[in-house]
Length: 194
Image (cartoon, rainbow, N blue to C red):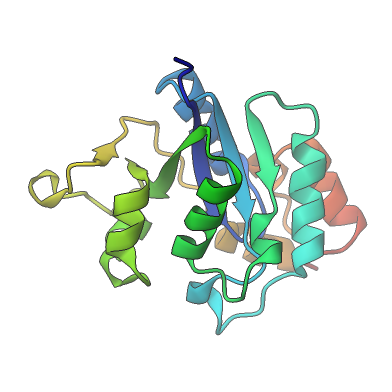
């Protein structure tokens, strides 16, 4: 019997993608046994309806270009074909239907996990996929109220956020240490956040 391909899902707007995202994806493959991690680019996240988001195709192109040739981390654009905003349960069900030989694991920051119970159909999501929580400073996970299929990762904490990167870039600050060089150059050359 063939084992399913264990695939991590790291979902977000990636506005922009940064070294923290890549670090947790690499950690999940190298230390936790995932075969791959897919960065699921969201055109419109339900939690970000009130703020301006960089053009979805620019964000998708940045992620695709950056991950080209990467054997462990891949870009996934399935949400571009789904109704908007991109509710996670719809994404999970669509992926499971399209890729029945894969076992999906949702990677969530502890800052997202504390609000997870408020997400649309959160209980259904827990019935469909495993959830692995990676640490974020200031957001502790209560081990006693964690569902059975939720695991906390002992991953390194990187305090990088897309919000702080966008703010710094808008002020003309150099944040090249927060992201891969090719992405930083793309952002600067195309004046995406200035």
